Length: 244
Image (cartoon, rainbow, N blue to C red; front, side):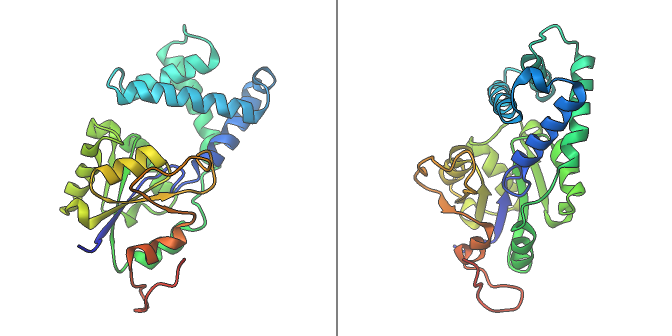
């Protein structure tokens, strides 16, 4: 059965989250007078991401809600467990100001969305919240490209659980065999989508997962420019895609 729709991850797939997070955190720590106490910006980012992963695992396991994991992430990062909810929220909002200033799409995103606009439907499935990703996609100017935007916080289930991917298929009224999923994480996105029966595409941009052996199932690409050929898509000009 041919692929009729593409469901997309957002962070580090469409949106350059790693760069925005790094630059935003650096600017935030400078503004807060904290950079000297946390080592280099790169070391700080690694610690921030490790804490984020730990707290997100608690959310994925249903131990805490989305906002609580974010507040606990800040408390752990600052080493201040006594921080009130209001203080944690205020700290995060100050960080967000710097983070959003660095927002950008990867350069291969708009060309591939344009190339597939006439041949495939599009949706988003993210392990985040709709409040976060809806606004992000609007600011980045691509919100209207997607028929549906689904996020773990509202779904009550997160990737790599098959139910998350199947919810995206249901939102499009398509079977998994008619849907491709594109994401940057080899296990959460790549294996998860494959196990759910979707055509799984792992976009490996040479980041933190570059040295990971690809799991069984996903198709591995280095640029989104390879996607139309992988999907067997025709471009809007009526000729087979030459991407890849």
